[in-house]
Length: 274
Image (tube, rainbow, N blue to C red; front, side, top):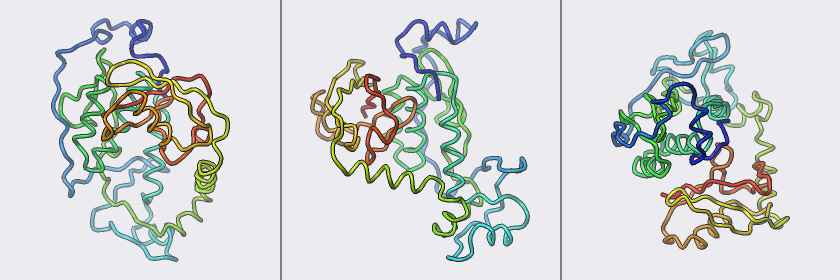
């Protein structure tokens, strides 16, 4: 996902293509504060199997009791594809995991900002974009976010806004129909994070608020949250500072270990400070 080049490497700018204007830092690019999402707002959902959009009318939204499952939900809603909560999250993750343009660390910041906006924490989302040097000309992320070189990072509205007609199927039933969907793998990852520290490695973290690095020792089987605490201490950040770790364009889960999330010793991680 995303290019792994550093935001400060000239070659990354050159690789932006044959459009010099888009590869130049533009401090004057229009920028508006991110806007909060109205609770009642709904958007068109992602395109699912068969090329059909999963966006039934709002009157079909709701929960289905245990034993009904997605199949019964589909019968109730008609023959069209059904967008369950789990399927929506899979579509969102698939989108973030398949970005190949721009810079990985900016995509990581855009993803975190989108999740924060969706959760109602617009101030923190704005802080993440500011820390990454990104701007949003309209205040609505799905209309385009730009990095400091003018490269655009466009996201579907459904990554930020709740789509219409999401079906809340009982988690047990949905898990059976999706054949586990990696839930077992996640459970194993969580279990590993609770065990021994594993091999202790030096992790170099690049701080978004100052562009400098700190090196901390973290066990490969420790939870990422332990590493974050050491980064905050090493960087002499205020105890109230929020830090998220981005690696290869993904925001690492704090309750899982580095090993469970594919970290390779010697790689630099991005510490998003806000």
